Length: 538
Image (cartoon, rainbow, N blue to C red):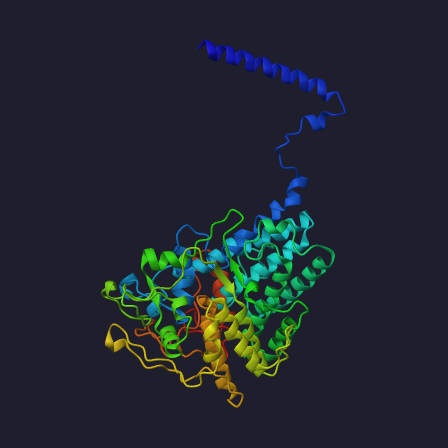
């Protein structure tokens, strides 16, 4: 007790001394310096470190593909139980709702459809809007243009899933979330990407290639040149997407993107992936889904192609079973006993794997398709022919997975065909739907060349199922197995397969007027999985 009394007396004396000192020093010209907390962040400090602006960048990046939630629930519902399975990469073996769920085309039984949409507006569009505002306040426009690129990387996935979406009026104070047609959204994408590239080029011309943004960037560590390449490649991807609905717009944007002075992705060091760093630990959600939930397995379609082609990426993409084999599952199987499937091949994706947005191999296959359409796809590496671009795509993909020694024999294989799939239940087994081979042949028809390009692009983009599903819908390739059981009540054609994800139930609760208007006037059909989106015109 005596110690406490003495302590308080001394403490009070110190306070009196400090008070008197403050009065004394306040009369001097040195008051501000002596009364400033040296640990406090000043406005100048915040501006220098870009905390008020750059701090939103990792928030956006970690949810372009939903990754930021604790666990893997958002990723599973937004990515894995849509694009990953609809693309043929993987198959779900969960018994949700008695196997009447997304995997069997019952798109109405739960709120799974809400997740990707809601995450995109919460974690991509909302932080983008904050960057839009604060980049003006702090006079750092280049961060805004970088955020524009990230925004489009995330939100194009949402419009490709659903069709018309709220876009042009977002953040402008409009009452409710007003929808734009997908055509208008895509036109905005092209304009915004072109503007972002032009402005970032200006930035580099008068600044260093990196800056304070390196503290926040989980993809390219602040390297603006790489962001320009990524933006060009994203523009190329979106241009190819509209090739059937607006070939003139597609050609213009594809050629401008490829032949920009900075070019597109050409090397695996250019690959766009979200990685741990800057205080963030990125754990790939697929690991939780296959190892903890035990809900996902190798898809039958990708097994058929990888095995039939004797593709050396098989062991890089999937894990062998206890017997050393690689065995997958047909989608749309009604599973009465999950344990029968649990021993089959898991995705070979560990927790520390980066979340891949785009790889250089995809860029080569995009250019190869442009070349067979007669577009100028030469680019900065001067590879104008479809054959060279196609082979380069395979080469870069093999290098990405450390199997380059097999490259020459693989591209010259003109006999290998997709293999028959054998399911654990014999009645679910199936012969391959495709007879496409690997080796390029300039005398083949346009359609055969296209199937060859898309099939190899599909193999190279794994495990990014969202993009793979979009390209399957756009082209019909690769020829993947349809679901065994279709619980859509006639809304989705089994052979044509699912075309889109219905709008979230939450939109009908919180934004009914606008979503109803979008369905009635912009979508072009009923709000179900059988209605095609705007660019799906082949």
